[in-house]
Length: 378
Ligand code: SF4
Image (cartoon, rainbow, N blue to C red; front, side):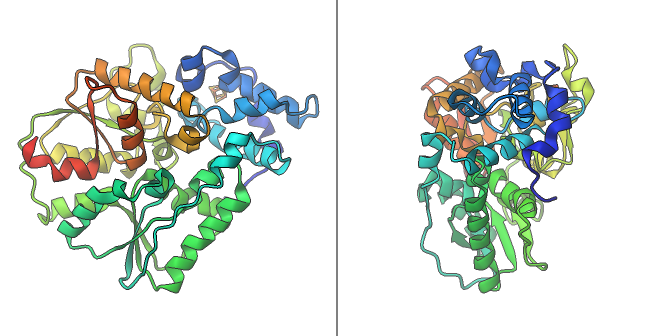
């Protein structure tokens, strides 16, 4: 699963430049009403660049960065063309040529390492929280870990996902190696991650960077641990809440799924079932928890692998905050129209970003551990 160069995606780029099928899912194009942000337009630009017809201009590079990795186009595509992979490859090329925008280079200076000392054989790897840059974000997670009596020491460190998404492959590799060093030098046997993006780094990005995790290591997400604790009765839930809930998946989840959306999902008037929009533990486990709590889950076509970005994904909230805020507002508008009581997400980064964009009368956004901790009062 090694990292490929942009030219190796020529066949996909050739296909994308003639196709407009994923336009309804084009997040930034639909927000800005600018055609250049569609996958087709970017496919055309990249195909021309690898064939030597054009050199990257400043505007080309901006267009390449003013979006997420576009995994939503990949999920919408009936052939699931590897859009997110070729966008990373293009950004890596741009980065090597030292053409990356200033806002991208600035963001990459961001480092966050909370002092840690590891004495237990489990760590709570808070990669999303490190990107957010504020340790208070993980408080609910620590409350839950205490309830479960899972003694995992917090390691809040950039895990490589942000650098990888922005094409800074050397930096991503360095950060990934730091994580591996922490694991192997401290005889850690279990890593519990704070959200899908950190899980994506460990399970998807590290193999691409040819960085192997120690063989006997167990990687789980906080969501999986909570579900297990609830199923074993370690955490008691009343199961009586009748709240209507919409679950927001971050874009990283799509690249961890077993299956992206099937063709039926993109038919006009699609009404479900929700599983058609994507399958795998990354989607099922948090939803199972909500079901156990007795809440009514509502979904829309923009769920699971077709979940529209709230702007917190792939570093966009840091590199182009205005676009990211626009995506958050667009997502909030959608949530409001669903007539639900709460939006729940398993990503602390999405929760913070969405909450930061919401108006007082917008629907409330909770991170899954917060939902559990406040379950009795809902
Ligand atoms: S990703 Fe698929 S649907 Fe989108 S432009 Fe490329 S080929 Fe078409």
